[in-house]
Image (cartoon, rainbow over all chains, first blue to last red; front, side, top):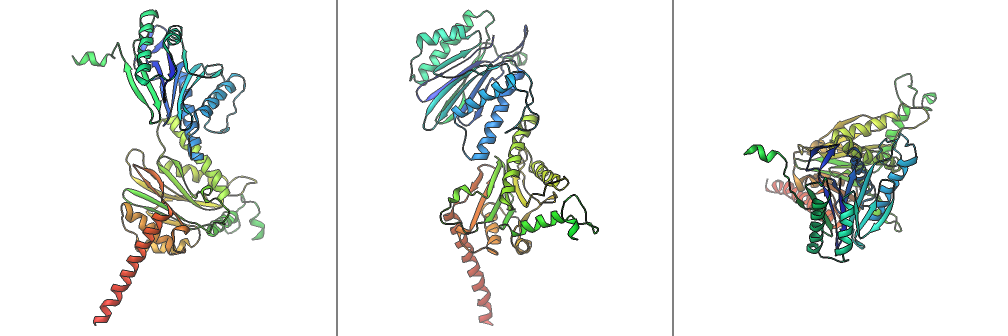
Amino acid sequence: MECVFGMVGDGFALVAADTSAVHSILVHKSNEDKVMILDSHKLLGASGEAGDRSFTEYIQKNVHVYEFRNGIPLTTAATANFTRCELALALRKVRPSCPVHIVFLVSQNPYFVNILLAGYDKNIGPSLYYIDYIATLHKVDKGAFGYGSYFTLSMMDRHYKSGMSLEEAIDLVDKCIIEIRSRLVVAPPNFVIKIVDKDGAREYAWRESIKDAAGVSAA
Amino acid sequence: MARYDRAITVFSPDGHLFQVEYALEAVRKGNAAVGVRGTDTVVLGVEKKSTPKLQDSRSVRKIVSLDTHIALACAGLKADARVLINRARIECQSHRLTVEDPVTVEYITRYIAGLQQKYTQSGGVRPFGLSTLIVGFDPYTGVPALYQTDPSGTFSAWKANATGRNSNSMREFLEKNYKETTGQETVKLAIRTLLEVVESGGKNIEIAVLSKEHGLRQLDEAEIDAIVAEIEAEKAAAEASKKAPSKDT
């Protein structure tokens, strides 16, 4: 029931994700942030098995090591390919236990996590990469994962045009969220939207229809 | 004695590890490096031996950052330094990944010193030929720290220290002139120490300042030249005032 989707606009890219952490029929929390800020100009939205979302932390630390080693950040394209490679290696290769190239993570099973990587590079502009759990990599203008993708992809096919302004893109995101809420049987109530542009990666807004219980007890 | 310096795993009869001592010799031949701890700033300085005309000096970075709040300078074999620095950078991120906390200066110093020690107690390897000066801020308390490691794997914390060429003279100077400083005063103290053993001028000195807010900042040549000029002016003024009283009496 997890929904992650994103799109590229005029000078920015955005990633929206639902914020529910679910285990079978129980909702553990509805404010789980699944869109990680990799570095100053990259966002990584991950959906899938909760434990494997820590794979995104592993990617983040490796991106940081590269930046310290070389004095400049990895490009979005390089990060996307590195991420895809890690996913691909975990599909077949038995990982060695010593640090191979960078920070190591011992895992003998594939990572069950789908990723949308959004980034802004100075001479290239915004870009979005679709990376699924069996290491498919596509550079896209719009993408989505999960059951929500049935609705968001259709909405984006109908309304997306390239070079949208931030207002138009957020409007489309809200349309997608409305579709998910009204048409998906176990729709996640809350969403987080993060954007990345020349000024960096940051949280843009939350769309909450259920606030966590903490507020209720105060009254 | 010659029989006891082949493999480092062998002690000599009088308790020396000759390979480690020879590594310390290599350090003594390396460029001069100084580190000074202030109350809100830590400064690292290294001597820049004359760069060959055709070399791109930007590719020779002698003061490096290990993480956003930790920096390192070293004296000795630069190739060995590359290996240690790489391992330390990985360890900084690995620590952040596993415990979700940045490393403390002491932790990363202990890690680097531990690596250096390992190579004094293994077969078929030689020790790393470098001593490091590690500076940083505690990620939570913001307290600045300066540590030094050497090829034997020992480390300790310092208020100010020097290593490499002429480190003894620099350390003597620091012992005479150290006091608690902040900001620009800390930078001046580091430069004054280096000037004791290095030819004066911005092109022979590399200085980096680590502050809590701005991370590691390498000073450019013009800035260093300006501070050197200030220092020379202060020295000249001090000399003049020393001579003046004797004229009156």
